Image: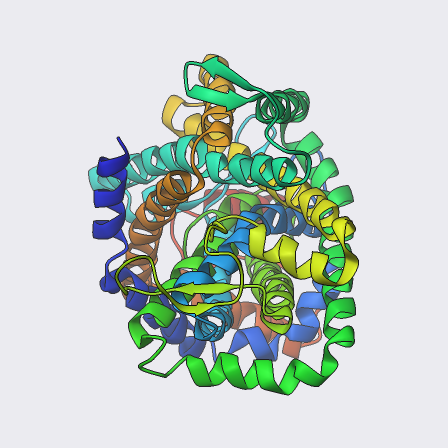
Length: 498
């Protein structure tokens, strides 16, 4: 199984996907005239729009669920892995893919709003929905089916294990593995088993409450966890403020040097950037579709801001902590296990929160280990919730809302969490990369084809900007007037308003 996953990972994450992510972000940044910069003030304003309804959640709740999905192990262990394998220059490419990816996030999230449906009193949408409704006919149904299957596999099976594995590794790094116990997964530490059980039980209590409960939990936890983590990073930066120019120079300079390996820096920066901020991956649109908004472009603008929160704020916080304290190694391709840079014990696992824990502990002692373990728990736990919601939406798409299928996907996700928690970090990360790459390929290619056929998300942006310029207070969206077909939710809404 491990060799199969490694082979798939190598095929899916070829240079073609890496450059496709960057090219798509640049393409949409140009076409939207850098909406991620021009509409920054509007992003902040829309965050506080409490326009929820019995069918939909508020823009802030949709953002909270989206950020909970984006802010996870990728922000702690993922950044450490990017530095450990790609060098400090990988951080620069994470910034690039985040800045450009914000426009991609706008496109995919606006499409989700345009083509969302009201499914028995609950808004649903995402790539499978917008591909089927845009393309129509047999091809639309076929492509929607393939996309939905890929999200069920990715978010239901592959990705949750990465988050659970990170939680367990962070906690056992503080309290130890405990006595080894023979299980079906091999010999596992008792503390690992106890943490796995706790995660599964708490997760079950939340996901059986539906999207409204997930939204309430995310709305409460996400702002505090992100703010607390960033404040800790700022403290470490302040204590090492004299090193700030040196670290920034290292990040920018190393991004283009042959010594760090330009391909390694770009490859790891983009891979971990896409894994972390999810721009183009197609996961964010599921949460965007659940929001109650007056115009589809509003949620696209809000979701663009979530990419900033994830990478430019939280990922940067991790990177600066690690680089300023020097708590990292850079693994090269040299023989005999040598490193390009070795600052800490060679046995330190790169694809874990270890570098981050060591960075915080260098200033705060054992409290640093505990703080990162708690941060990882909340970051990862909320991400697992977001993954469940995505898997559940796609299972509903495939089974026309079958309650039995909804119950089955809950059990599958709990198994994936248990499996990921007790396996090796490297293997589980590779599974996660396969999941991310699979959905990214299908979604990015699909939304590019949509653009060349009709440009609905660009049309929506222009319509929204025209209403802004006209000083309209109550925004409306009339897809028929704009030449957008099969946006039946909005067609019905505009007819009801007449």
